[in-house]
Length: 115
Image (cartoon, rainbow, N blue to C red):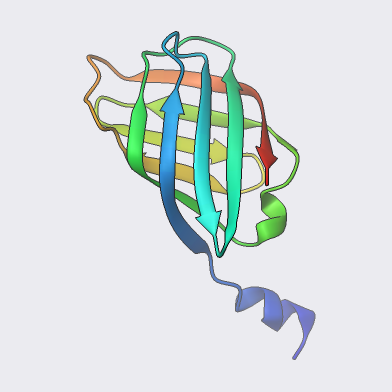
C-alpha cells in the first residue's frame, strides 16, 4: 500500500466530552477521553465571550498526534452552539447547555493539550 493510499484511508475520529468557560469567558477547558486516556485542552481567548458550556462537546481529529502541545485556534460561540477550529485541522463542536443572547466570534490566543 502506498503512503498516499494509506493517507486517503485515514478517517477522522470523534469522541464526546465536556467544555466549560470561566465566568469571564476568556478561559476555558475541554476534557475528552480517548480510550483510557483523558485529554484536557486549556484554552485562552484573545477577547471575552459570554460564559458557555457543553456537556456533549465533540472532539474530532485525524490522528492523536494533533492533540499535542500548544495549539492555535478560532472559535465561534453561537446562540446555541460552539465551533472551535484548530489550525492543525482538529475541531471541537457542540450544542451549548444554555443558549446565549448573541453570537460571538473570537480568535484563540493559545491553548495546550495535556494528558
